[in-house]
Length: 452
Ligand code: NAD
Image (cartoon, rainbow, N blue to C red; front, side, top):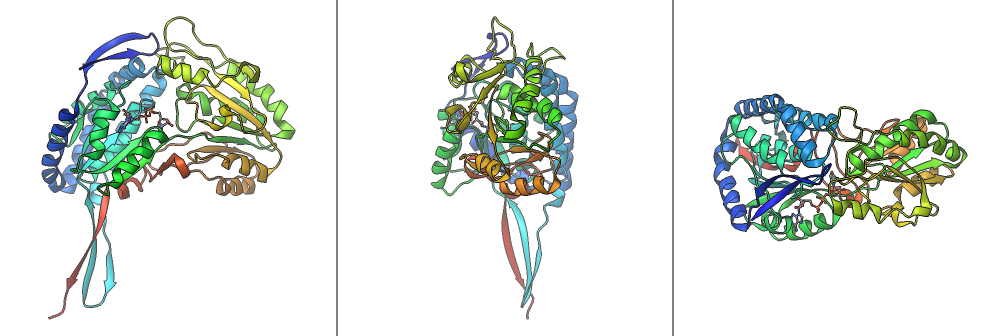
């Protein structure tokens, strides 16, 4: 079966690729299983060297990968360069891991007790369309660093950079079968990548709906799962914040990647005493956002990924709740203007559900306790921001908000060296930083008797 890959900025076909079927998935899992014993036996320093070489090859192809992402995903060229650079940096970071997968020596009677961190075997990495390169890297890099072999499936809409990364892995000298990428339908290829008995772990990023199903399927076979799912994160602005800065930064906290970001701060909570002033400051920041051809160096926001996604996003926008909107190109492509909606009760659909588009809702709150209550009034818990100049308040609220990644006076969520993941229905397990390796290894305990 062939599949058209579309440029979301023009709605034109970029290329046509073959789609794998169940038999292809099974053959690839077979190759990953066959490659595993030799890969886990590669000396730690050599495995590290191969990952560093892979990082260098990615770096040498950074512009090519970035341009491919601009065309396939409509990401701005600035973002796409960061994303390709992130794959390189994650490879470099985890290239140190093989030599640092330490065990412990635990004092016991009658002998020596040692622990080892063993790889799991074949790992399935299933990736969504919103950040094809970084999310692929966050899964496959620590997995192979720990000695596993990986089969990775990109989303149907955005396969091109992942397919290219698999070629670059071979160019860098990674043995065949260590990292394979197959493009195929989620329900078909993805389904087999979850149920196949040789697969020991599923590392899934995507919707809470599909993630829930995968977790249930993984129970048969007691497969390990890491889930990175949806979000509806709060940006909490207190009256004592640097209001001009909070308002100027708010659009970037939610409209980056056209809002198709699991960490999007899509609920802005503003203390009532500064609510009107904040909206006055927010309006020019939203109107001035440069929404244009993502290939342009000036572009700050590109199109949505598909016509379908644009319909979904638009279904949340009730015209009488629109406070103001930015602009976007007309004509071909799946464009949508940055949009600010006013919430009243916190019960509105646009306040409660993940929109995954450039739409943000604003709601006033009264005091600190009210802010924490409203921020936590969601089944999600991935990210969030707190704007205040009061350090004690920043820490109290950060401890009170049930979410995995918070930033104070900024909107940063992701650094390759720090853990990333969700509370509640936003996920299970942690990626990146030192924690990710725990998800791709098992602890083995060995006792050696020293008595006669
Ligand atoms: P999706 O759940 O529809 O698809 C994600 C991936 O799963 C795709 O590769 C798809 O082909 C595959 N898939 C679909 N059905 C499957 C099945 N039955 N078995 C196995 N695989 C299957 O998600 P999407 O629309 O591509 O991405 C958007 C969602 O991803 C949003 O909800 C967003 O919040 C979430 N997301 C979360 C994070 C995070 O880190 N928490 C990061 C990015 C995106």
